[in-house]
Amino acid sequence: GTEVRPDNVDEVEPPKPAQEDAAASPDRPDTVDLGWLWASVRIVGISLGALLVVVGPFLAILAAKAIRRRSRRGADEPAARIVGGWDEYLDAAADAGHRAPAAATRLEVAGALGQDAAPGLAVAADRAVFSDGGATADDATEFWRIVDAERTAFTATRWQRVRAALSLRSFVPEGLTRSSSRAERSRTERSRPA
Image (cartoon, rainbow, N blue to C red; front, side, top):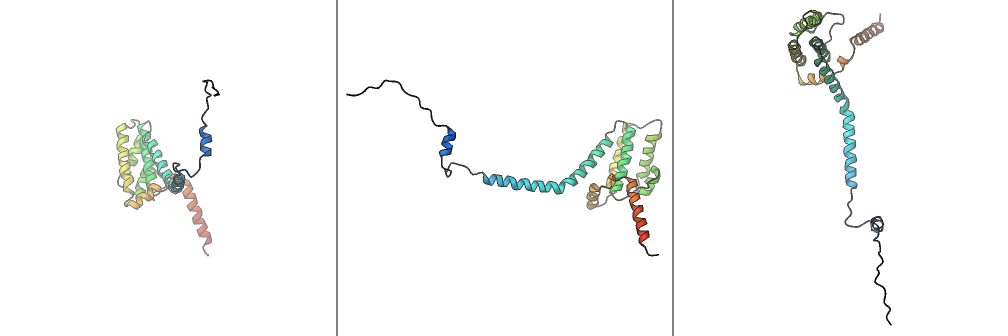
């Protein structure tokens, strides 16, 4: 006799994918090797990091000068913008290698710098600060236009422009450079034979 089984079916769960992957051989042709990608990303990352270390300080100097210039140009009052323009003019002169006398009026500084527009800028800055009428927004705009033109006049060659743009002289307080040069002179005088 034949034995008849009932019509009920037992459900069997398929194997889980993690189990299947673990059981699969590692040399299957459909797997993708991304080792080259990680090596490339590492090389590019190290190269960009080294470039940032080398170029970063120069970019920081340029950014600091741009932020300082923008804050001076964007002052609320026209008189403050003009005074900021005068400060920017002096900083551009310092970065180009021209130092203004320490205890001097704006006109004396303008004479020491020897630029054609300097006396006019000095008079306009004095007028903006000391006059009762005050300065207008148009005066401030015109003052900054002249300052921008004079900033480029301090440097004749491209190399001088790059050197002035990356110079830190305008960030060093005037008294600090004077005292250090005085100390250097006194050291030199002491070291000379009598």
